[in-house]
Image (tube, rainbow over all chains, first blue to last red; front, side, top):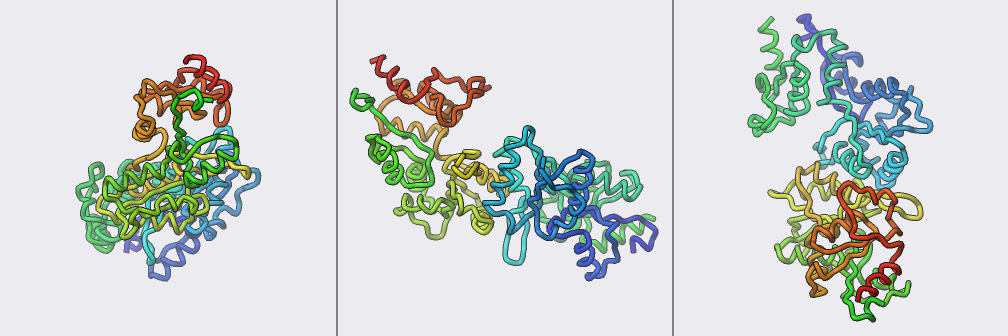
Length: 227
Length: 227
């Protein structure tokens, strides 16, 4: 309905357990008519950053994400890229990433998000942010976070759309990463009362959405009414 | 020589990969005449704390440390005790400790030290502090650190000796954990220029030892000369 109305649409995801191709496949199977070009995701954003700065990454990421880095030179690494590696977060792999970082004159750690945890069918799991903190502390460095809520990430989504922030609206369920990040970038932001949303979000000490909606369909209704 | 001179001696270690019994065995094999009662270590300090506060721990520690917690009730845990678990720092074990913490009304995380990393024959390894930071971030809690440089840890060593801090001298190779910790407790502290010592320690922004010695034997010489 948004696309049919002539409005532009970009999906901003922090998904780092799948390539954009597979992410889009999953959404299309759910009935969303989107293409890879309409997805802004941390891994391609990281690839851009690596290219710009001549960085060669050591990857500690999920196996299914590795194809996103196919074009990147990974020989003789001079930085570490950290994603939600899940089962790849082994003691051996963490020590390896750590040794590479601590051996660099100026360690560069790029993290594909800074989530604390997430829920899967078999329970809560530590997210990439927790492992990022472990490496930050051990190496006394600050990671560069790619993905929501980084300002640069929202800016690249806006650049894809060719729209200035004041003409864009972010819709999301995460009070800090979606709503707060978009607002810091000059966009308005709606929080949906589904998914990650918790009633306590409505008393968040730092972030206040421009409006609440009960679900994605209601957000679309309201936006289309304004046209 | 220290003990023969009539001075009292207590060993303060952050060792959490072995029981005091095994630690003492190793030192005796090296020619040091010490007993278990002369060792202050994080695990027994944690046991005291657990007892005092009626806490039942879930242990994420090295297998060889588990016997130190033999007397502690570990059923239906209401806190997590984290040590340098080494190979036990698996993705599954970290998620398990995390889930227990996040499920507590007020998560209690007790960490047996906060070291960043250490060196073994096969290379550098992430130490307990890195994993502590991961869990702190994921659960939005602050760990209670047992072991050096915690003031309480040095105080319990002094209590064992029955000596006030101003009559005690700490000798150690770690500028922050040994020297800084002891000084904050009112003791004087010597740094030995062996082991963990790095020349850059002599320009440490926050900690300045009362004196440097080239090795442990020199420390003993100097102390005995003052008698």
